Every structure is written in structure tokens, then in C-alpha cells.
Image 1 (cartoon, rainbow over the protein chains, first blue to last red):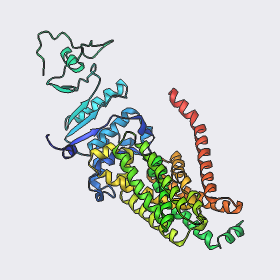
Image 2 (image 1 turned 90 degrees about the vertical axis):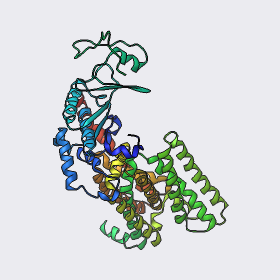
Image 3 (image 1 turned 120 degrees about the horizontal axis):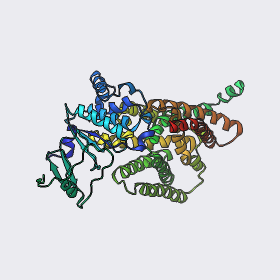
Image 4 (image 1 turned 90 degrees about the horizontal axis):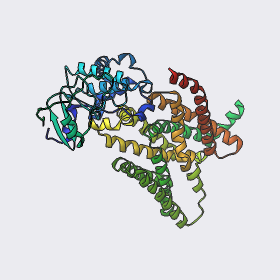
Length: 194
Length: 281
């Protein structure tokens, strides 16, 4: 975007990686999501406006968390907390949703449901998600960019051995057991997608 | 019992002491909740001890020690808050050093000042029975400042305490709010010193919110409960210390700490079967 980070921040809805340490904080789901409605003008928000409330409710409904709005954040599972953070990012009305390792601390079933949610949201908003798991990338992901000091953007959704090599900067084997969703290899004669 | 209490409160110094306990509890309960939830207990301890430098300076130059304490605690709270926010590595070491510098300055200036220093101990261990009207006015002012600040910036303070990086990404003026909060802690420390002394200030700030947080899961409720807990223990502690002829600050803190430890033990005993059941399910 070529601007100072401060100027572009309102365009991005940041969803942090969930951490164990904030589990003990005394706060409920509604209050966490309502943080997304805070604006730089400090004197603008003594209480929530009706627009704020409506926006929070919509985001909670979109993420299926409305029923748990009064629940303390400590009582939620990893996947539920991830949904709360997504809802909080949504109420900031961003143009891009930026997720940092959304499935890092949830089981595969939960992460499947999380990706379904993201796919649903993706109809209205661009989503950029960061993952360190090179061996498993959701079927919902449309394009891939690999970062290892330099960014290599691949205009498609398959992981090729070349991509892994350029990502890891060393040759690696793809590990897959049981019934993998997709295995990609043998791209002989393929062009590199730099 | 009733007649004993009514005799007790017929003394003007006792009424002043109770009023002081009430005002300090209002400030301490709310500000202490922020201290506990922001995990800056160490900074608060540092501010309290650094304030001693101001007391020493006031003795030496012959101005009011409370004024000296206000001066030093505000300066040290801003310095410590700034260090804590700007340099993440080793900030605890630097704060520890500032803590010691304040104490050292105080001790040296006091030893340099001539004459008998009768009320020096009161800054270390508190003397709620000797509060002046000026002290009460200062307590009222600071309790009101705390109330207004927290009411006004409640949502931002809550957001900052819960997830500072989110508030930064949202471009909220977090540095200003943080420095405001830390200054408020400095001011609260000074008035709390009159009640329990600078050595035990941390306990007065942190025990009531920690106790409330065992049972409540909402910052607003924790603040209100902390004020109530603090009012209760300062009042009971005051009466008990008078009846038993013991130092009031130490009695108040010991009562609070006992309640906290009992609650902690009681809760962990009650919790155990639940967490086991959850672990199996």
C-alpha cells in the first residue's frame, strides 16, 4: 500500500493467534467483540451506540457465537475463542481479514469447521491467512504465497515440490498417511510459478 | 459492643481514620483492579518505594513530605511506565533499579536532615489514626480523579488490559491512556501510604481485586467488589487494631491476606473434583 502502517490499519481486520495466557482474564464474549467498535477518538465511546450493538450482534451471528455472548472467555474452547476474535475483527468493518495461524491450537475437526466459516465469510471479504503448516492447506484456499525472507506468490492453490524447496530452502518430502484429501507431486514439466 | 463502637466513633481522630479508609478504598479498589489485570504489581511496588525519595527530599528541604511523595511517585510512575512500554527486554531490571534509587535517595536525605524524625515511621508503616484534614482532602481529590478517569475510559482500559496489541493495531491512543493509568497508580500509592505505609501498599492495591477475581468474571464487578472488600477490611482492621493496641496498617493487611489465602485454598479444594470430571469428559 506504500503508506505508513498507521494509515492502512483500519483496512485490515487482524485475528491474532490464540494464546493460553489470556484465558484467565475476566471478560465475556460480548465485551471482547465490542472492543472492535472502539475508535481512536477516546471521547466517542462512553457507551455502545445502537449501530455498535447491531454490528456486534451481526458478527456474533455470522460466527455462530451469539448464544455464547454472555459466556466468559475462559470457558471457551480454542475454536470458539478463534471465532470470537474473528467476530471482533469483523465489527471493525475491514476490507481484508488477516488471520495468524487460525488453526494452530485446535483439532482437525474444529479447524475444518473454522475453514467452512472462513469460506462463508470469504464471499463478502478478502481473507489472508498465515500458516506454518506446509503439508496441509485447506481446499478452500484460493491462492498461495510462500514467505522465507522473500515472498513467492503462486497464482494457484496446489503445493508443488518446487514451492516447498523454495519455502524451506532445502529439499523436503511430503508426508501423508491414511486418507489424505489431496497429495500433489510429480509435476514433471511444470513451470515454476514465481 | 455497640456502646464500645459508639464511644470509639465519638473520637474525631477515629472518624477521620474511617473516612480515610473509605476514600482510599474507593481509589485502591478501582486502581488496584487495573494493576492486577495489567500485571503491573511490580511497577506499583517500585512506585511506592521510589516515593520514599520524595519524603526524604521534603524532610531535607523542609516542605510537606506528602507533597514530596506525590512528586516522586508521579515522576517515577511515568518513568517506569515509559520503560515498561518502550523497552520490553530487561524492563523489570530497570524498574527494580529505579525502585532502589528512590529508596536510597530517601534514606540519604533523611540522614542528612537535622532533628528528630518522629513521623518517619508513619510513611513506612502507615498511620491512619493521624490523618490531617489536608490528607483527607487529597484522598477525596484522588478518589474522584480515579472515578472520573475510569468511568470515562472504561472500555479503552478494558481493551488495553485484555489485548494491548489489538488496541495498538486499531490506532487507539494507548500510550496516553497507559501513562494516565500509571500516573493514577502513582497518586493512589501516595494516599494508600497514609493507611498502610509504603512497604504494604502493594497488598492494599492487589489483595482486594485478587480476592474478587476468584469469584467474579467481569472487570466492573471486580472493581466494585474490591472497593467493598477494601472498605470492610480497613474498617474492621482499624477497630481491631485500636482494641488490641496494634499497628493498624499491619492488622488491615494481615486480615485481608488471611481472607485471600483462605479463599484461595477453599476454592482450589472445591474446584478439584470439577476439573477432574472435565478432564475425563
